[in-house]
Image (tube, rainbow, N blue to C red):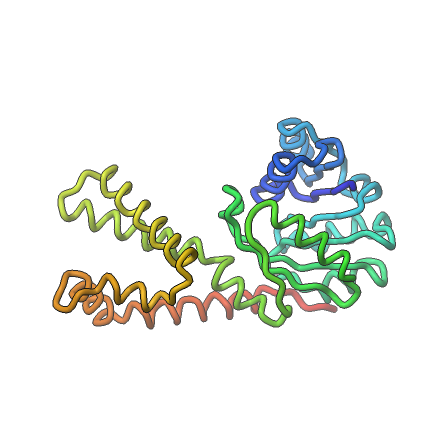
Length: 267
């Protein structure tokens, strides 16, 4: 199976690396980018091929659209005539709907929309995918297999993609923000920065692992740490006084609204 990755940026190059690590034949991967030198660099690094977008599409069974949303219209127009009837098109561009792509690709093209996130860089990504009107179960399974190389995958109705963007797509930025604040607090309390960083990062990793492996609700796990009259309760009270929970809800709602605003019209 030949896979064309159109876009050699962070996510495109991440997918190339993950596919090669998982055992895909590098010569079955074709990398394209509007900057030819960038495509050549990524392809050469992994032993893959590189070609202009239209040429890469013509030989591909799966075409991954990994460009910025503002570059999508021009790219789809460029490859339109090279998309074969049985080709699967997977878009990992934020805010681009399946209807938008179906309108601009040959009639009946099988399209899957995916919202990944940056932990895909370390094979711990979270991808949410939504099939288009013409997507077959076989093509959906192909898309799922592709994204499972860089983490976990869920399938859901496209109407939820703006919420996904707000929760997991933008989610790493919230976590990094909190981690940054906790490290600064450690420095404020007199810890060396490298010590504070190690304490915070391992605490984050351990807490996330507990949620995944125990299956317990976060509230239950939080209550296990929060002894009556103890330090955790004092800290949580301060967070509630500053309406941190409400701020997170407002922030994620703003992200979802912005995702909807960025989605280009289908026509």
